[in-house]
Length: 481
Image (tube, rainbow, N blue to C red; front, side, top):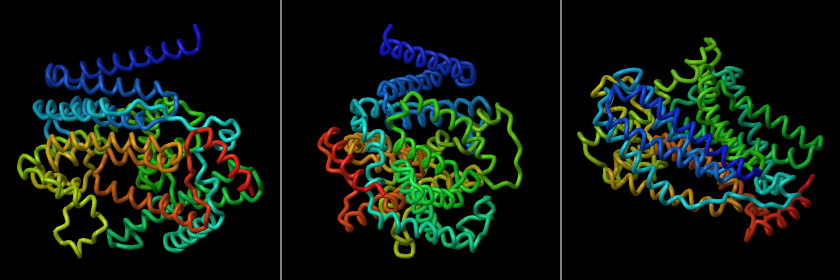
């Protein structure tokens, strides 16, 4: 049996075992509680997830589909099953009702089917030139050829930011006892500071890491080491939320190691991270005040019943909200697109959907949280109902297809979007869009604009993988320090 057939057999075995085990979990946990109809709708979601995983791992190279279907599996299948089996109430205090379970699963099914039908057959692949791949390949093209003046600007800014925070908050910031909220009480300023601090320090670290990978010189070692110290002070598992840690991890993998890690390996990594690493990091969420090692069951499964996995129940909350107040017919989405307009100028500016639904829950169910996450499906439903879900599904697929076409020339943007996709899917969209847009400006738009001003464009004029390899090889030779 050749390697290709053996890998095909392993894939079939993996997906078959995955489907059978998860189907049994669904049957044992839900069949007696909700009945056959709810059970079937959950199985429909499982079928979509299995098909999605099959497509993702069929392409050996890393692709966005892996992230999409891991989210659907964890938040729209496994988590609600665990929550329904655990209690008669969801984490957001809503009661478990079979009719809403069926409705939610059918809406999720509609979203998944649209994604499967319109997601183009992909072959995510970069240049194959051996030298380019060895030197970091197209994955580090923009970072490698970035002008030294640009790298210097970000390095100096990262130093200034870290020194300012250290002078204000000392080690309390690094250990999670203090945050940007201790510097300013204004929410807009806090958001702006958070975006700038995280974006500048992460971009600076990426620049330094790319140079260190390109050439192991003393200068690059000092550059990379000092940038790493700055970055670890600003961003570490103790003082940073898990979503952003995941974003950084995914971007680094998609950007630097896409030629070394297959989609199947990455699938196992991300599942391990989601169900083991992230829950463990959550015990440090509020600093080092009280640490106790969890049991394996608590670490892997109990988290599914907590607010971290409230996406499914918040879709139900959105249904109930719309039954009372109706749809916003685009007004809610207008707030997402114009998030940058201050509320002082626009007093009637809509709240984020998470805050709107959170206020509804606090009024109807005495729910103590008023600013909750709200998945992207809910965002489009609260605006236009089922039609909005169809439109939203098509838009997401279109964006992913479009981005993947340009991936060879724009892997930097592709990797950043891949990292943010989890946050966008979980929502709410206004918060995610504001943070994503701000980070894009800090990490992509400004660096590439400044690079062009220095007459050293970061984007590569690509016509084919071979031309990309030839172009990048020439640029790398000129740029090595």
